[in-house]
Length: 272
Image (tube, rainbow, N blue to C red; front, top):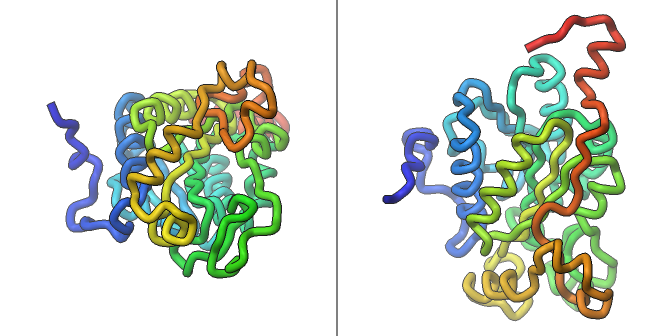
């Protein structure tokens, strides 16, 4: 039986703005199924986003949502969580939003270990504003601002999150729709800063310039280059060349959560 997504969609908000073949619709559906599995009410949930293709998602869904300034979704999300810790806060944005202009917010949210779930939609490009390269554009790939190929090394979002202090880090792709749902659900249920990096195709801004003209080409690429983390751990660097691990990459339940530490420091009783 088909899943009823309509119960989470705001009336009159569709059709969406994403290009045909964009992986972001798949992400939205996986996220909605994961949220539904938590049993949380719509009023308990807050989605915060910045600017970009990924950041338009909160406009379509029937939760408490806030569409903020470029790269600042985690700043707003942190304030919301501190003001009302009972809320289930999800921050989302693209690779540029989270690792370029919002990079400082990202690393410090990880460092604090505040109880927020962060979804990073990584399509290697600034899709909305013209196809400029981003901090995750692979070396050699072409973009409007890298017509001869990218010469800068790219960020590994998941490794960056682990190094910065996030206590749950996972990675998936828009091809792996059902595993993505399960991974997001684990992140939602984790107490602390959770990061899920989602590799997603942008056939318009990235694929056409880089030999993947159809959305199916990008999905096949994701399937062929993703390696389950448990398998990847036992592979050599040479065997993993050009590939990436998916699944739960890091989890630590021993570190204190930021809001609880803050409340103890200022003498507040338990809230929420």
